[in-house]
Image 1 (cartoon, rainbow, N blue to C red):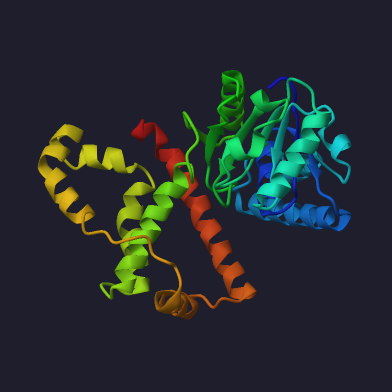
Image 2: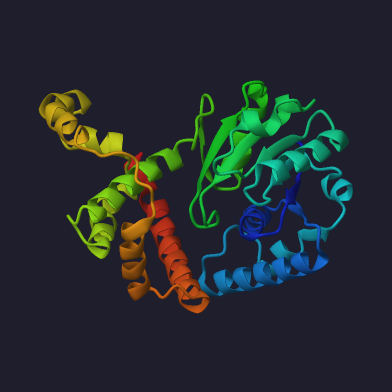
Length: 318
């Protein structure tokens, strides 16, 4: 990137994570929101997280927590927030009209070199950016929650996005330690959510049909598929589970087709099955803020440890 200054629009959980990722690599960050109190709260949260990460030895980058915090400034004026930035990451709530409004405002005040990027998890670039005069500079950079601990970023172009915008965004994500993937064109749900929803859909059906309990279903993933998927994907798994992909298909294609043809329709995600799953999950983790926050903290600790292990083992897997 030509500048070390980025702007983040929205100071919620995702915006805070982006701020931490950029400052870890020495970028100056302007964090924008419409309410000063929201920004004050965001800075307090970021400070607390950074201090905890520093104490546990998991703070990213070579700068101290205080040095990273000094790189963040806050702003309630959009024009001031984006002035001088060459990368702008939008992190407002997942509402199409709200995001379109933000990008329409940005379109009027930015120059011809800035990249306009959205954190949206499901809104298509063609719905977000069409009609903007800076559409060639627009792109989706979809992180995975929580972005600080899960490095994947899906880079999704608008049909009119300039290839240089995609390449610059990809390079920037690599620079801040993320694992970017480039989609050649947009599709509903992008890639991660399409895979995730396929798993959720079949999980819902299996529980709904009484084949397995909700807790055992989760165990199949956490202590089964998830163990290897933390390091290798489904296609490489196929490759290794036989003498290569072609051999795997020769062995298992008919069995796969037989099973896949028994899959039912898309669930409604409501009614008795929802109640059954909700009861099981609430018995494990009560659906109250204190219990959920404690489990999220434990999840993030696990993810931090896993990220460290993956980094140590990465050279062996290349």
